[in-house]
Amino acid sequence: MAFWILLLLYSFLLLLYAWQYPSPSIQKWPLLATDDTSTPTVRCQDTNDCNAHHICLNQTCLPQLLRGEECDPLTGEWTLVSIQGKSLVACICKYPDFIHQKHYGGNCDVDVTCQPYGHYNLHTQQCDCLEGFVAFHQPKPSCKKLPVVERMMYESCDSDEVHFSYIQPSDGFIAGYLRRHQNKKCFKRPCTFDAFTGQPLKKARYEEGNGCVCDPALGQFGVRIEGLPDYVQGPGYNACASVFQTPLEYPISVEIVPYFYLMQEPPSPFYNTKT
Image (cartoon, rainbow, N blue to C red; front, side, top):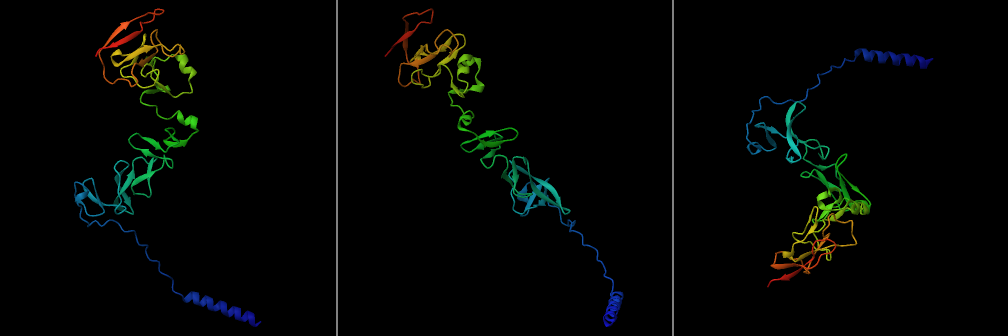
């Protein structure tokens, strides 16, 4: 019985306290600070005319979003943004899919498309990949690792070679020869190298409808490699060679004397060098 009396008394005291307790007053939430309209506008021609941590934009000095941050003009540009009602200048990336930034408003210097096996080249708009990786362009630039055999197909040809994809009829190759070597990527241009040493020959060339044209003034003579009947188009020579171990760079005076004909082929010459 005493317990219930105490419980009723305790409840009465709680109600009395709640009735006497003053109601709280809710204050108005402070608004975010806005631009001080009294700040004078500073005109400028470039950023050197502005105070520290300000950028000249539209001939007006404006504060940076991130103090002391740079903005590479090749990858980003200063742009006016509004943060909490305040006008600020931030670096915004030109190519966000390729080169981004560590944080909003920062310099655009984070490669996001070619990493971790290369970097994006702004001039070629392609990936410069590490050794052993190949640059791809679709669906976007990237560096991928391929098996050695496949990787060789993407490596650059030497200066005296032509890539299989770029071979033209004017290069003189017969289609059958290319089919037999379809797994080869780079081909030396016919007639332009010594058939015996492989060294490049100056001025030697393929002439459509004839075959190889070799320059005797540079010690060159034409040959026909009978083991390669489907190598070069034309009835004439299918290769050139030099009488000198090291091919000449400059012409010399020679007399050309044809000495025999064979099966209506062009005459084979020998040379008498004038000294």
